[in-house]
Image (cartoon, rainbow, N blue to C red; front, side, top):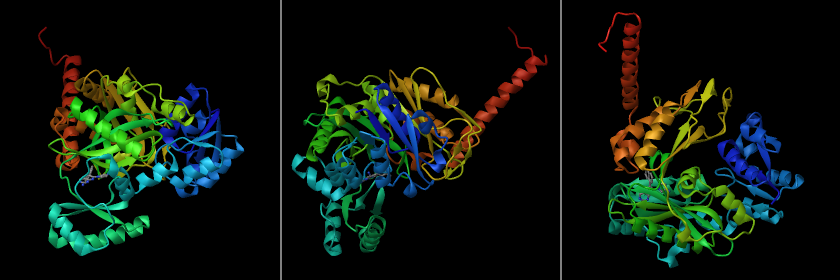
Length: 479
Ligand code: MV4
């Protein structure tokens, strides 16, 4: 592999290019008109403008991207996350064009892109699943009877959904038919596929996902878990590895289950198997994400592996250089997603110019970003500014470092979710490890952040006053 094209933008494009450069592989960036001055464009060996700012006129135009790649003698395309990363047709076309798609085969993408096909595929592998139906519901009456058997609340999920899209909670029997009809028509409209199924609603789960790596020769390992329970409206906010609640035995069981899920669809490359973990530490398979994920850095820090390097080796046809027993967890890592959003105004996107942009820089702090001072935050894409990632020997040490890193992160010109992150990392429920996916709903309000800020403003004012009184000689403290 001599040259790869990165079919993405922002921090992940830059992240992938850095590894490629380290490996001596040339890089091609693509960019929309909104991203002319973006770091990923400057960092690449070559860069091609592919169209106007809207994604569906630029980053989502697979055929155009493939054409450009061919013209530039590109050997492989890395899709990053989002955009075309889980588009089976795109993966197929890349390979038909004689290039390598850095990711799994289209078969795995297709199967895991359908929740029902995924359930069907893993069926023979003895993977624990939430009680529910495993076929699309056609008969609402029959489905209601099943729901009664399972017990309310139940969750209606769209087969073509994922990441929380197309889900509906039904609290009781009375609502069932109405909600079911709505769910089907919504799925039809959103995904062009009205297939829905039901599951028992696990009310206070943790969201645990297992990173897997598989080469082309049937060797598959897991790289332990990430706990992604701190979410806001299905948007992950904080991720950590390892989880504060997994025992070594449970870790081994979930890891083994994840490897089986990967094998069930002949998975190749880096992938993630999502599970729910209930209060009694029962785990259930949810879905598999067939891409490199946003939160992959926490896994890199605790395993010492570069996941992009692994993806490239695998895509190149190399055998995994290690077996499961070679892998171990060292230390603890957190990732905080920093968004250009206002946590004091319902997380409204806060676009504008980064008048000041100064991320922290110190040992065991990693900032994956795609911005520099003076840049405009574009309105056309995800408003994530960066990922603030820290590493420590212990969970406590890493939490402490995160708080320091947040304090040393200066952004002016746009609002950011940094104060929200600070609130999380100071919260007792989070610090103790005693939290689930309802953390934000239960513990967060704008007033609380405001109170946090005011408390700090008071302390800062008192310190300034004391200094002033000292300097002016009014206050003399005994030695
Ligand atoms: C669930 C669930 C509870 N019970 N399934 C969310 C993302 C998608 N991958 C699956 N998700 C969930 N599936 C059952 N049977 C809880 C979640 C879930 C969630 C649900 C509502 C509100 C916030 C949530 C955060 C994480 C996971």
